[in-house]
Image (tube, rainbow, N blue to C red; front, top):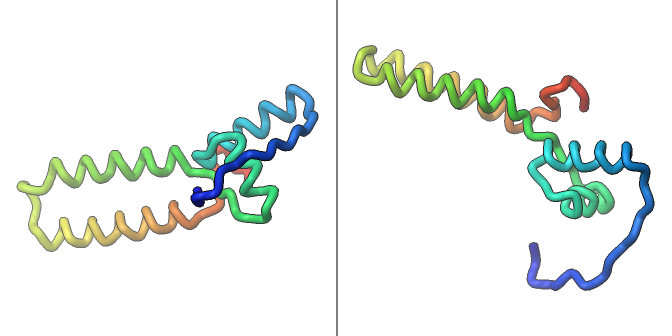
Length: 101
């Protein structure tokens, strides 16, 4: 956020279903509802956070950590390279966990 204080409110009427959908999308993007609406309303991207993919990558990092002392350093380095690529792909992907964009 910039140093400017947000002092102006905009009221928008939506159905309960629309509100739930907007809140769900905001959560998927890791944003508050207000933050999400500001982003999409100003034409900025609000990519959904691929939560399940990051959970899987987190588990893979833990397995790699557990194997650090039992496998050759070259294999660990190769696995780290692979994980780095997978994390970058997940971070830049616009997919969501439910298959929607």
